[in-house]
Length: 409
Image (cartoon, rainbow, N blue to C red; front, side, top):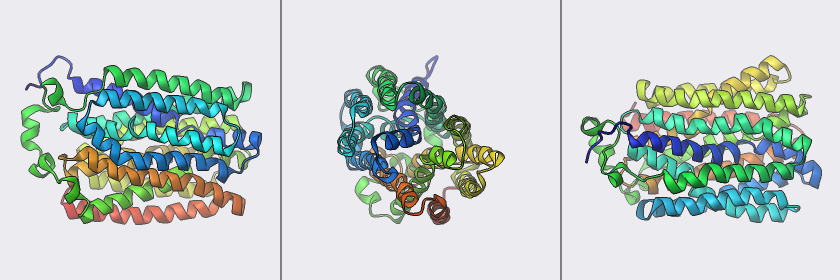
């Protein structure tokens, strides 16, 4: 095998993975907040009841995550991902035809199944397999796509809703998701460099430097018996609850404070622009400073940003919040796969991270409607914000424990 090529194919994997995250997370997940008020006011739903569709999609994705991890390791990755991306795009477009909560919930099941094999798990697996050197940077670039998607499509969704309807926005975005993800799955993705007679980025020298523990790693069965696995699971779960509990309620919260929907979505776009920068920087920092230091930096930023929401009735505070929050939430997507590979190794990475992704989706399933139900009960998001700051404190302690215990800093 050789790693000598004019353009290393791994960078094409990065481009393809960028489009997968752009569609599956940047559009589907990061624009949800724009739809909450228009849909609930149009169809008479409560915010908690409507956002439960996201919970159902997340739970469906959670159930399928370990199955997808095994399928992606054992079978043709392009075939599996083509089916999944087509299902994901079609399901999102079908939201445009839903008129009852039951219909939203049924479509959400298929959205979750398709999503499980379209972005987080296969993207994390491919980047981990294709890169040893520059792995953090590559991971940061592909997850920066989520910010690009949100930055572009939040204001676009608002414009389509104001000028046409929320149904038109769902249908348009479903088409875009299909165009961005299905050709990528068909023509670009490859599971690992060995499939093309290549070595990971960095070649033999990088393989020599890579620790024996990481090159080999634990089997999935052994990993599930370790404290490190369950600490990673706790970290991933609580970060997802806090992140998603805030993220998808930013637009309704700011409009509740008196901002127009246009101003709120513009601020959301600022947040997404910072997310792009933050994820690339977070990956680079992980390569340069180590995982522990970069993790602590992002967790402190996340807690401070959530606290700023209490003063976001002032424009300058709202701006600072969106900048800092956009930068800090890279801790949810960029660092967990890097921490998993470092602590548990690469032997069964797809299966192990597939199981860990259960906790990502569980946190998403809890966080989004939790904020909605707290708002429905108290007519305020303040209690939710306090809860999420507390969860971040617990998560910070767990991160210190797992990274210190592993001896990887």
